[in-house]
Length: 145
Image (cartoon, rainbow, N blue to C red; front, side):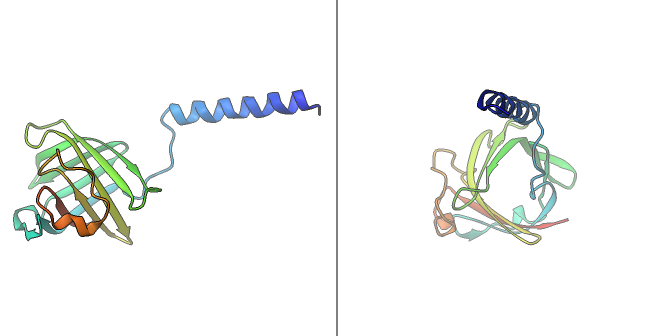
């Protein structure tokens, strides 16, 4: 096979891969499914009203409900290669806390810990969980359902 033929074949394979990626095909995220809030702190203070919230990820969508009632919802993106892993929620399904929440997450087995700036969207994405005790951040620990 000549260099030109090999180059052409490689280009065709690249085009097919790009088409698959842009058509919505993606690896299944380990976050997919339903999670239940077990503990929560806002600005380092226990926030018991968040306990029992159900967070679900389905494709690129998220929803947070309590007792079957929608509290928040929209789309989300993650970057598991960031250090720490980053997550962004675009909350646009309800008026409360509407906007983009920038955060970080840690997934260990069936425990998901998320810290984000939902209480104050003007705050930057936290760079570590130690920052999550500051005003403007909430940290929630979830268990997989």
